[in-house]
Amino acid sequence: MNTNRLSDVKSFLCKRKVDIICSVAAVALILLVWVIAYYSVKNDYVIPSVSDTFRSFGENLISGVFWSAFFNTFLRTLIAFAVSFALAAATAALSFISKIFRALVRPFIVILRTLPTLAVILILLIWTTPRTAPVIVAALVLYPMMHARFFAALDGVDKDVLEMARVYNISARDRLLKIYLPQTLPAVLLQTGADISLGLKVVISAEVLSSTFNSLGGLMQNARLYLEMPRLAALTLAAVFFGLIIDAAFAFVGKFAFGWRKKEGGR
Image (cartoon, rainbow, N blue to C red; front, side, top):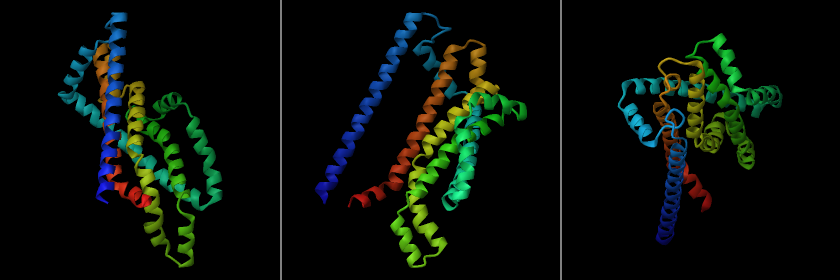
């Protein structure tokens, strides 16, 4: 037993080491391409230097204006995620229960998947405000994916376990709490970080087009208008950086929260 555990630990460390080395190599390659492109163009208004960008990035991290804008953007992202999460859970559950409802909701899901985001933003700017439009757009982008994931998780519940629950007259409440939730939540929640990161990207894009005041997208739009390329690149880098942190944090939590299920399955 101890030998197997030691082997698992060594395997995990080796895998992490390979991932870290590959990640560092990828970042180094990106920086190398950036430096080559900068010295090839030799125009700070087209491609900012790496040093100026990272200097601006550091200035942002100690700026109250940046953190206020980031908080507003992140709050919009969380609202969009919460709305799409609740709506996707409800419609996926109803689709799983009723084939009629599934047939009714399917065309809406297909339409939402194919809607051009830019056109939706422009329309919403006529109907709503620059602060509201990014939230609606992000929710519309996230909802179809989350609906499909919820439905797939429900459809993947062990049919033999459900049949046994029916035979032994297990109550609907116990089936929900002891069968459906334990088997569906891991698959759904492990993607939460990726969904929030995607929502953050969509919200920022909508804010840029909407020129939303006191937001990351608004700061990017201002930097573009005043040709502050190092600041624009630094804000873009910040958006990527925080998106990666969110994704990695949820993946780390999910690994510890649901890792025991994988161990049980492997025994």
